[in-house]
Length: 84
Image (cartoon, rainbow, N blue to C red; front, side, top):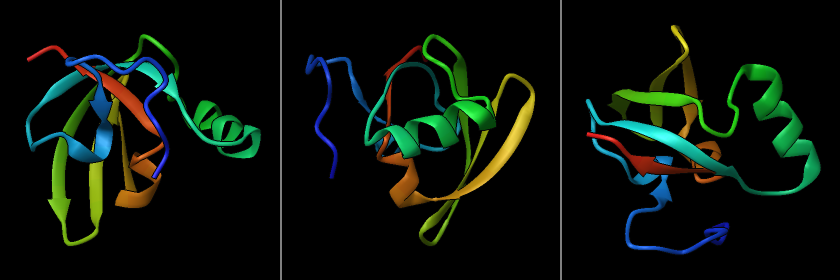
């Protein structure tokens, strides 16, 4: 599992969020290939992301009005700070 970039009590991984939670992306973790893939999908630092649904090991999130389904493992590369 990737390590949090700036560990604080407020930062957590997107995979650790609960359904309905709204958060702000604080960092993208992992190697450059993973980071670039996330950026191309629209996951940018300071973007607001909503955890919409969890179904088994898959999750659905909304970023800037677009919904994405992803494996929970990919969500461990997105560090967020909860807003709600």
